[in-house]
Image 1 (cartoon, one colour):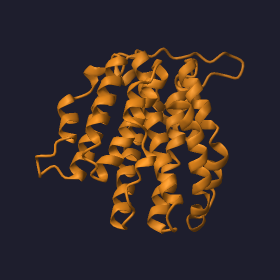
Image 2 (image 1 turned 60 degrees about the vertical axis):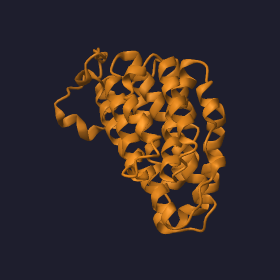
Image 3 (image 1 turned 90 degrees about the vertical axis):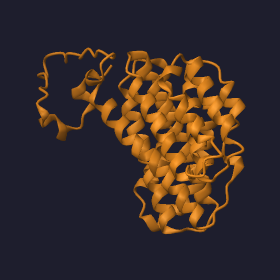
Image 4 (image 1 turned 135 degrees about the horizontal axis):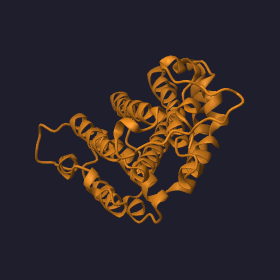
Length: 278
């Protein structure tokens, strides 16, 4: 596992973390994963910031609704396939992806499909042994159709709240690793949806900017995963995300007015990783 000194950019070392001399071996810090304040700095910081990215995906879908972009059912994975995932890594990734799809479905008011995704999420959480982390009451509200006060915006907010509460409850060592993989699955699926929609419509600055902003989530997810670089599953997921480096780097260096031309390549690249994970 990397030490905090290895994880934090140079500018943050002024916080009082002392570096070992070049001649001595760095001392690895032991984290007590049962306590939130003992987790690696990058894990905690990136978990907080990736939550904003999830909300940003909802904002993107809202923008798309407002300009008349239709819902595209072929962009979401099958709830039954997510629910049938085997192995802890695929189950965790699928749990994140199902949440991303549920966000998309909710923002486009696909009420007939949302129950199967909520069911998949709760089933996967149970298979992973983390069902107690999810507030079933919040999840049930997302599928509520009789309460007219629950707008699609409110339901999207409830979904964010449910995942935030779950993440806050997953602070044992193994569970923190699962959280990283859940976040990775959610980021990839959200990025895949956004890239595909962006590629299939005419360039619009507001949409292009929102899609462009989402690419920087990859770096945040990698920082979380790299905290557990000695865990085979986290390492494998990180390697898959790093396979996207060529297109993500190209996009990050482009002017906003030119990013649209790369969305098709981004959609294809995320699709390749998606086919391995889900």
